[in-house]
Length: 165
Image: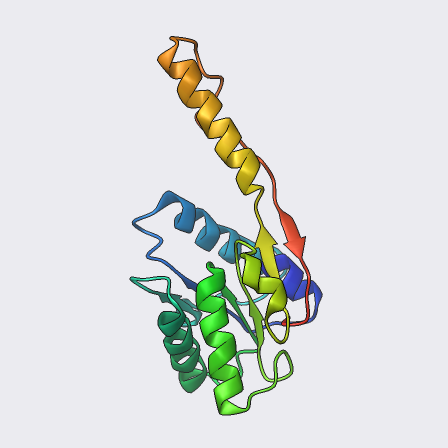
């Protein structure tokens, strides 16, 4: 997502995520964010990263407000949860900030409601059904004593480029 935002012209991109030191998934998302900035020559600032204890709408709104109060020049925020991104989107609407003109909002997971917000949320879609199928098969293989090929399986993702970014 960070690469996508950079390709669209955003340069002051913030990240809002769960505590990345406590979760391998969130650590990988933070690491990917930082690597994308570095690869594209965009400055990384720890002050543009907000870690939240919960991934709710209130936390998204609060994180967005804190980021923009600290640095009003931030032009895009990548939330590692669609729910947080929607909270931020609602906060922008409450304050009369046009999206993406004032700030672009992007999420992660492509929840059912993401395409129905106004504007529709730019997000990352994971193949949830495939993840469930593969996880189930790995459990069955392990219970049957069969060696599973890998504990990590890359199922890919799809970028859902919508109007919020």
